[in-house]
Image 1 (spheres, rainbow, N blue to C red):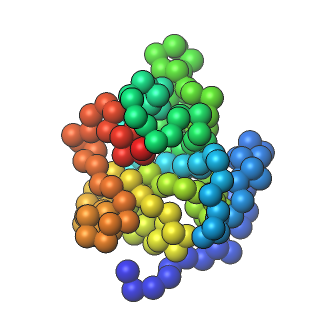
Image 2 (cartoon, one colour; image 1 turned 45 degrees about the horizontal axis):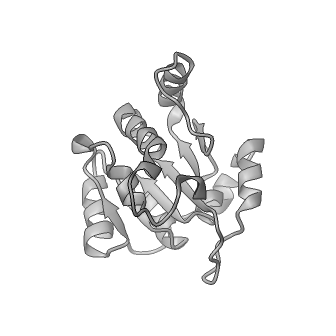
Length: 186
């Protein structure tokens, strides 16, 4: 964490998805005094290792069951989720949805790729693998994180930003239990 490593101009043409654009139009770029009603939550595990279907399936299950737990600060309908998961994971989850093995809540949008910087400018929470680039981007835009580190430098980065700097909550992906992501969101 020695400085900004973000090149917005390299990502300028990422916003071609009309559904994502419509969501972004509903959420203003965050200001320190913004306290809007709906909360925008981005989930992304980067572009290299994003094939852990268990994490995505647990996430969807937790959103479906979010309101069943008493004393939540929010309702699941208060959230708009955008999930970037890569082509392989998106194909697998779409097959499970088509076969009726998995129900997708209306407030969850699944995509292979999304305009991450544009979303982070508006996001209230980032569920991330804590790769260095994604973590730097979340810090730049002041977005708290739920870290789910997978490999490489991610566990160390996640420990640093979540545990030591208190910029988020760290979860263990291989020990992830149903309900943990929902609890961390709350």
